[in-house]
Amino acid sequence: MSRIGIDFGTTNSYCAFYSNEGDGKLINIMKNNQPEPSLFFYKSNTGEIYGSRCKDYIDVFPNNFIKSIKVVLDNEEENVVIDGISFEKMYIVQKYIEHLINDIVNIKLESIYEDAVDEVVLSFPVGFSEKYKSKIKKAVENISIKGTDKFIKVIAMIEEPVAAAIHYFYIMKEKNIETNDNVLVYDLGGGTFDAAIVHKDILGDLTVIDHQGIKNLGGDQWDELLGNHIIKRLEYENLSDDGLNELKKIKQKERDYIKFLHKVEELKMRLSEADESIFVLNCGYSIIIRRTDFEEETKQLIEKTLTVCETLINDNSDYPISQIILCGGSTYMPMIKENLSRVFPTMSINLHYPESAIAFGDILYKENDSVSTILKTNHSYGTRCFIGNSEIEKISNVIYYNEYLPVVKSKNFCTHTATDSVIYTVYEGNIKEGEEDYSEIRSQKLLKQFRFVFNYIVPKETYMDVIYTLDEMGILTLSVHSDNHPDQNFSVKVFEDGI
Image 1 (cartoon, rainbow, N blue to C red):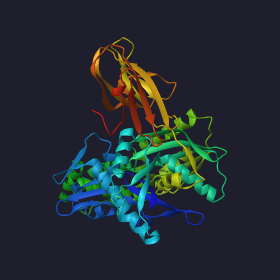
Image 2: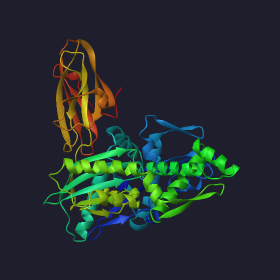
Image 3: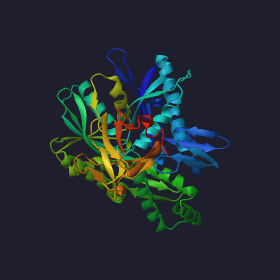
Image 4: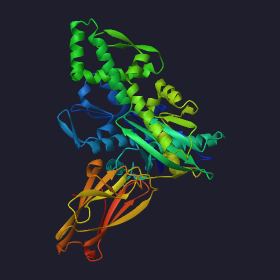
């Protein structure tokens, strides 16, 4: 059986395999060596369709598919409705990754190695919460190993810019090229932006020094602003009745809007290679869009990414950066490298395998002995509590942002009043150690609640230890222990139980 690395991307996904034959080598196991679109389509007479085949239906049934599957996870609704059928979002994720493994990867593995996938290394954006990491892990582990009654196992989860750095240093070592000890990874995908400073020590071990990310900032947002620019242009054109009707539907984000965005995305890719390109409406009317106009309309987006990079570099001056690594499909846009060169003129900026670096880094993390990586937490975690004997509630931080993984920490809490049960509320934030012991509730994100039941009334100030454990994958386990009530002690993974 074989293990693979999976970069589950917003726009496209990629898988990689490491062959241990001979000196070992990375293998591209994608169909035609191309990434697979992260798409889902459903219609009652076709059934469920995943990946590249969905594109055959976009123009005909634009309202029957989900684009950017990973981003859809970030809203609170658990289900999406397509063609009158309600789909659980994690079911779509599971089936899409199952499609990657069985319809693409296993076909190639079987033809070359007579083997099939049984273990997976996953990567995730810096800003992904524990909730979504846990859910994606669970979705993958619900996939059956081909030809057996067993299930695929997720053996590791790492941040996407970390995976890209692993692959970068691996390639430099393979080519016998000397590298700087510190690099800044600039990862701009279809729906998220991540940046990380990665340090290589004298032993070759990689450590993430610091990292930041922006959710909902990626190629999709560039598409949206380019689309708005085109709409503004069309409003001043002398359109026919058909053109005016099409523009009206686009502006109202009706049926034609999905097809419109698909054409906008294709235009964006053409503008990465040409100074100008033609955009054509369905009615046949066309206008010329210049790259300079596109860059002007979207400069606000790139400035946000530059601010993150400047903050990381300034906050970590003990780790001087002279090299920036670009990865993620959206870094193909010329404006990315041009603006980074403008802001960081003394730094070397390299476009590094934009579509495949993360998947290759995923598998190298577990398969290559020459790569050793030290991971850190990407969030802080704490418990809601009363401050002293007051009625003021805050978050008592237990684990902090940027601590080394795995990490186990505990805090002592007591009941605020006489009671027969206590509800422990777990929150997620971005607090660094030393910044604050207690945080305002509004500044953090509620993850889950757990009830500790005594089965009888206990007095005020009954003490319990709350133990937070983050494993190497960043999966959170909460344990509650009371010496006076040992029969009620419990330990749960945060997203496998709760109220």
